[in-house]
Length: 564
Image (tube, rainbow, N blue to C red; front, side, top):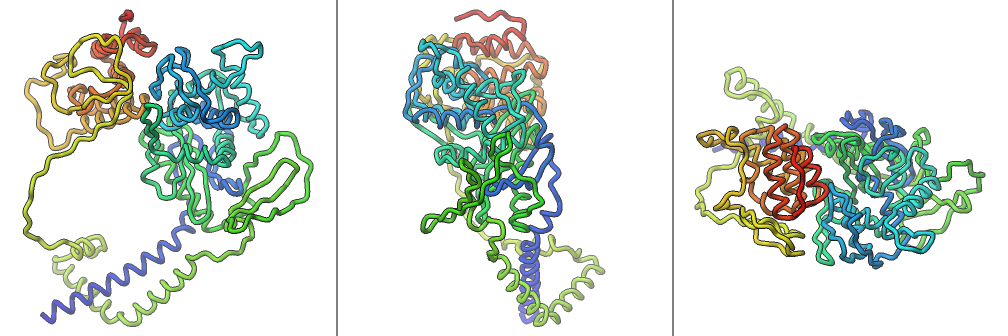
C-alpha cells in the first residue's frame, strides 16, 4: 500500500513538471511560429492586419489570377452601398446561370437582403446575377437584362480604392477572359467591407432562413476556428480552391487570403496563415519594416497633418485622419507604440516560478522516477517516452455498465425543391416549391437506375469502413448546401476510391435538388463513364425538365437534350 502511494506521488510530480513545461512552450510558441512562415499549397496568399494594413505574410500577393467566387465580396460591397436591404428584385431566366445556386425561380420576387445571404452563404451565382441585373440602371429608362451598369460601378470602386490588379467582368466569378484580381486586392476590399456591419453579419452567419429559403454557409471554418468572424469560399477550374477568412483574437483582426490551393489543402492553408498572423502580431504588434495595404487612390495624395479624433466614451477604437477624405481606424490595443502590457507576461512569470519551485521541491522524486524508469527499460518492461507515460497514467479503469441500444436519429435538411419520389420515373411538370419531403435512407423498393452491371461485383463485399460511401455522403451534404462544384469533386473521389460503388445507394442521395444530380453525373463524366452519366442525367430530365446545365452534361455524353 505504501509503495502504491509513493508511485502516485511520483506520477503527480511528473505531471506537474509536464504541465509547467507545456505552459512555457505555449508562451514561447508565438515567437517560434512567427520565425517560421507556414509552408502552404496555395499558389498565392497574403495575411494582413485589418487594423493597420500591415502585411504579415506574402506569397505572390500581386499576381493576377481568376478570383472565383471571391468576386462576390466586391458585388456585396457595391450592392450594400447602392440600395436598401428591403428592395425587392424580380428574378428572370437570365439570372439562372448554373453552377452553385441558392435555388431561385424565374418570376419570383426576393429582397436584396435575402439575395445577399444567398450569394455569400451557399455562393449562389443566381443571386449574384439577380443583384447585378436588379441594381443596374439603364440610361434610357427602359427595362434591361444587362449587368453592365452594375459592373461599371464595381470597377469604379476598384479604381477609387487603388486596386491596380483587379478588373471584374461578371458579378459571380465564373471563369471569363479578363476577369482577374490578386490576393492583395482581395484583402484590401475585405478590409474596406469590414467597415459595414451588415457585411460582417452576413459573412459570419452559418444559417439564414427567410422568404421561404433555408441557406447554409459553405465556409467550414465557421464552426471550427476560434475567433473567426467569417469568410468566403470560391472554386473554379482556372482559380482552383480559394478562401478569404477573417478572425479576431487578443484585440487583433487579421485577414487571410488563399488563391489557387487544392481541395485537400485550402482550409489547412487558411488555418496555418491565421495562426501565423496571430503569432506574428503577438511577437510584434507593429513593425515599420512591414509593407502596408492602404485604401487610397492610385494617384499620389498630398500629405496632411495627422489629427487624432477623440474616441467615444467606452470605445476601444481610435481614428487617425490622414487626409481630407481618408482616415485609419485602429484597435486601441493594436496601435503602433501603444506600450500596453500583454497578459501573457505575468502568466509566463508565474509559470517560470512554478517550474523552479517544482524542481527545487521534487528533484529527489524526479531523480528516483528517472532511475526507476531507466531500470525498467533495461529490463524490457517499459519504454521511456512521454506519450506512453501519459497513456498508462490516464488509462481508464474498467467499469461494469449496462449498454442499451438506442435508435439513431436521422437529420434531414429542408430542401427548396422536392426531390424525386422514391425511384419512380414519373415526370414532375410542376415540382412543389419550398416543401421538404421526408427523407429516408432506406433502400428504394423499385430502383430507378444502377451503374453498368459489369462494374458491380457478383458478391457484396463487407468492409469495416466504406470510404467511398463516406465521400459520397460528404458530396450529398455539399450539394444540399448549394456547393455543386465541390460536390462533383467529392462524388468523383468516391468513385475513385471504389469504382464499384453505387452512388444512388448513398444515404440521402435522392433528397438532393436537380443540380445535385447534375453534379453526380459530372463526376461520372470526369471518370470517363458517359453511359452512367447519361442514364442519371436522363432521370433528372424526366423528373425536373431540361436546364442549361443538364443540356451541357447530355451534350458531353453524346445525347441531344429534349425539352420535357
